[in-house]
Length: 513
Image (tube, rainbow, N blue to C red; front, side, top):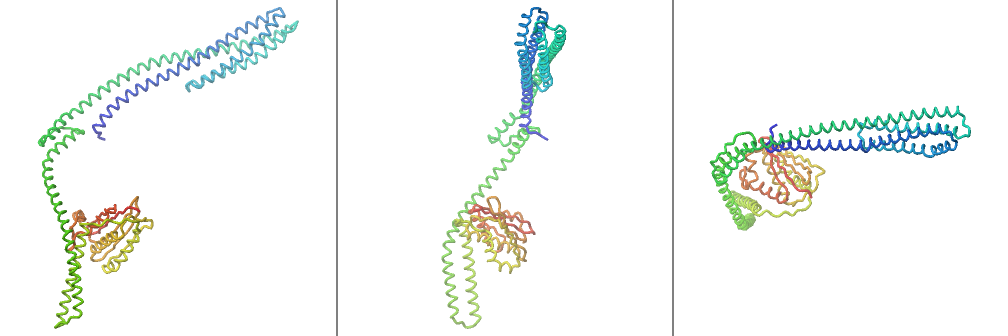
């Protein structure tokens, strides 16, 4: 796919932006990752390691106190040791273990998913040590009970002390293992963070250099691509000064070259355009002359209608007088009556022509009201039924029942429909089929009048709505022009589609009520 010049330049700079964006995104991501790593170590593993160290120190102190208590020979001193051990050691140890377990759960909330198994393992180990200390408390209580008597049973004390020492050894070993695991984890995380920091630095430097190289390349490529613009500006300036012989001669396939070739073509066609403008000016002058003729025609029509009316009235009076007059022969009577009938026919024809010219010159303003277009069409078709049947035309009514009312002047709408129906009848001198259909549209109603007549060529169809253009002998060329004026005054439209030898379709559109 060939890309436009603007698209290529945009894509070039987009590559630069994306490259720098990737560098920035990578840097921000790594900084965020390092921040999480620091938080995990400082607020997580280091604090848990400190808690484990305190537990180990406290446990070691307790082991020493237990040995002193077992070696103490004074009963009162031994009892004092026992009271202190019962009062301080179990509650403090349980509190510290529960606190360490809670910290492990808290670390789990902000630690990465990869660290979750290790942290859950720490939490479980703190819980196991806490369980061990409950057992240790029961064993210590057995030793305290045996030593609290005046004369302790040495065998009983020895058994209880052995169990207590075994538990102390087990708990001490578990605490040391816990501390070692935390120390190893801290060391692993610190070593990993240092390695990632070195790798991240190398990547950032590499990406930055790549981004700079890409940026320089895009700038050079853009400058080379836009170099013909200066030539284009100079050539356009010459054309703007009227030098139509200026030829830019820019080669290539991009938009600048295409634009330059278009300007070259424009320069070659401007001279021809001047001749066309002169011809159009002449045509405009002729149109103004036609408009003036139209206004004069309206005045002449106005002056002719009154004499025509008088002539028609006088002819009617003569016809009435002829009924009472006598002639030398029947042939004379028939000849006079035929002459008067011919005069009457011509007067009626001239009156109709003057009426059409008057409507063309001064189209009446429509009185818009909601109208049932189907009812209007039914009335017009019923009115012309006999005329259409005599011409051998079969009428097909294809009305959509959902057709809404339209805003229209009923009299003018009937005039348009009558004109279209008569045109269709005249287009089918040997008979045919006439289809009248309605269809509701969004905001409009469409009326279709289609015949199966001779059709018309594209050249005829292009001039069909021009005033005074007609293909019928004796036609005025005003019927379709007036119909189009009426529909435009209604806010609608009239269009025509025709295929020679297959028929013609007129499409009317009227606004919904």
